[in-house]
Image 1 (cartoon, rainbow, N blue to C red):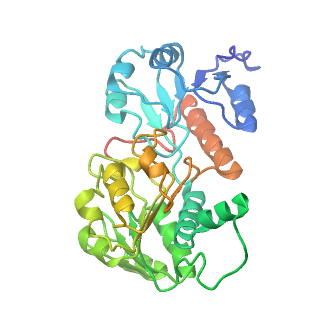
Image 2 (cartoon, one colour; image 1 turned 90 degrees about the vertical axis):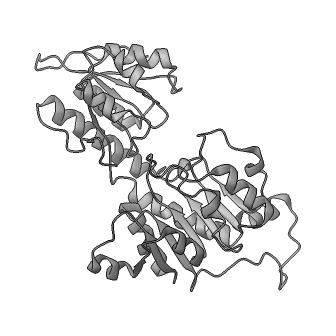
Length: 337
C-alpha cells in the first residue's frame, strides 16, 4: 500500500480513503489532492484478511467488482468505515443490507457503462453471427487460400428477432443499436416500458420469458444478478431456444446456467454464444473455451478510456458529497436492484 497523502492546505483533516485496485492515473491524482488516499500499488486483488485490515483503517473504501465483501467482513470493519464508494455500477459483490445495518452507506456509478456495454453487445452479436473469430484465426494461421462462394458463411442480421432480457439503461441502448441493423426487437422485463418508449425503441414486450425465448434468433442478457435472476436462463429455458439461436451476455454470468449452456453448445442445440461475463468469474469452463462457435472476452464490456474516467469522476463526486455532509448522489438502497 502507498503511504497516506499530505494534509490539506485548509488544515481540516481529510478522510482516509482506501482504493483496492489501480485506477486511471488522472483519477488517482485527483483523489490524492482531495483525500488522504492509500492506493494498492501492486494492483492485485486483496486477500480477505487484507480487505478487513483496510476496512479497519479507513473511513471510505473504494472497491471494485473483484472485491467480495460479505457480512462477516463488514462485522470486522470497525467504527471508522462510513462509506463504500464502489468503482462500478454492479453491486452484487457487496452485502448492501449488512452494510446499511452497520451504518455504512454504499454508492456506485450507474449509467456510466451504458453506451460502452451496448456497443460490446452488438460487437458480440456480429462476431458470433458473422463468424469473425473463425475468419481471423484463418488469416493469422495463414490458412486462407482465397475467396470461395461457400466459405465462412455467417448469417444476416437484418430481419432476425433479438430478444433482450432486461430492458434497463443498457437494454434500451442495445435496442436502439439493434434497430439500425434491421433487427426486430423483443424484450422481457419486470415492468413493461411506457408506450412512447416502446414506440421509440420499436420494441415489442413479451410478458412471458418462455414465449420470447422460443421465438427469437438472438438473446441478449442485460439483467443484473439478483436472487431472482440467478440461473434465469436455466437448462429448461435454454432448451426453448431454436437450434439456430445465438446467446450473448454482457451483464452477469450468474444469470445463465453455464454448464447447461456449454452442454447445448457442444451438442449443437444452440448455434453459438458471445460471452463477456462468466458464472464463476475468471475461472472459465475449459469445455466452453474449446468450442469454435463461442466468442469469449475478458469482461471488456465497459473497458474504454472514457468510461473508466467517468467512473472515477463519479466515485470522487460521491465521496466529496458525503464528506461535505450530504447524501451521495448515487446512494444504493437495499432492494433497489
